[in-house]
Length: 494
Image 1 (spheres, helix red, strand yellow):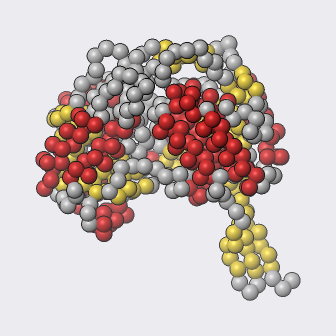
Image 2: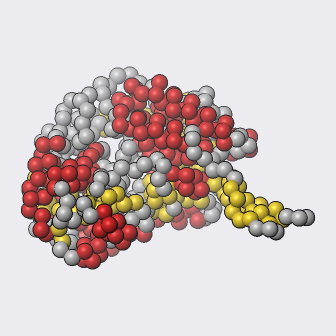
Image 3: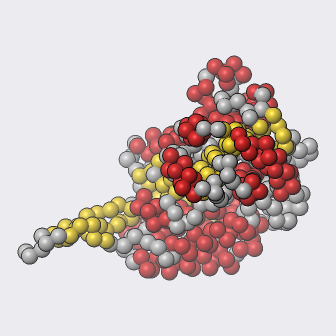
């Protein structure tokens, strides 16, 4: 995140910069040094933000789609103007900033408009879309600007007001990205409050918030949904994905290796749709694994200079670092063979080498659990870990460790891939596109990529199936979750 110069960060409430008597510091995952002080929003700050948003909503909701899209262009311009600073603050630097601008500009050209649902000689029925009110966006620590901005852009283009709560592990870039947009939108339309789980819980329960968009773990998502039910507010949950890659025997091995390694180790595997399990056909298993280990060791290396561009980085925080270490140790004890990496770097920083584990047991944590979470195995006893498999749903494996398993029968590998927590994304590799599509259609995941690593597109609906989510975002279809749809019936000849 660069040198520790003097910087101030603020909650933004009704276009006012607000400090706080309560602050916290984030730990730099590269060095374990404390970063800048960051204000923690009070309950009153949140109440004031909700009040400001509800006061702004009546006038804001009457703006036209064209007016709101023009303001999104101005927001993109502000992000570009402050790109140097935001790049330094962002988890993945310029990659995050460029993607944020791209998705903002996408919605400056795409929106919900009235459409004819049905028409015959007697009646015409149109659908029109109305904003919900105030959106509460509870955001994760991986890709903090990208994943908060998709909620911001979706809210703004549909005529909602939005209150962002960044993860306390990565508040800086989100607070600053909202601050640089001051003056673009009417007061109360875009606000940000920094805090922990207690502040997020208040947002889910508050009757003045009409929708929650949450990105995080399955266990927390269930609690969010239960809390939202108390006020019947709308809710979108983008949850964990234990994403599988299926590699068929006819692939070009270097290409498939490059893509699956990118899916596994980009940002140290800290991506909701990262490849978490690779199933390789038995006929090519050995040459694939050998080439994959070489790719992991050569292309994804630890770089000490934070200013040097790298596709690989540290685990983002101590909590997740401990989770990933626990899962690695479990894989070793369970009998998986570590073929590359497998070491925690000595010294400061939350560094784990890109790690390849061959043929771990199917019931190991590494195979069964997605690495994105807020619960580690040291929170439960060794006895309970092995006696209560249901407790494993609290684990998540968001880190640079990937198992490579073999398969021979298509029905079998699809069954193994389709875990309850694997509903977010998947990839299929085959030169036979008809076979790849056949497998893709049988995978129980919201998004499937063929012959490429996982790269969400702002123009495509993104959602999780089964335990990996509820509803979805992105694309034109994603805007429907930020709107009510009203049908208006016009009789003819009367």
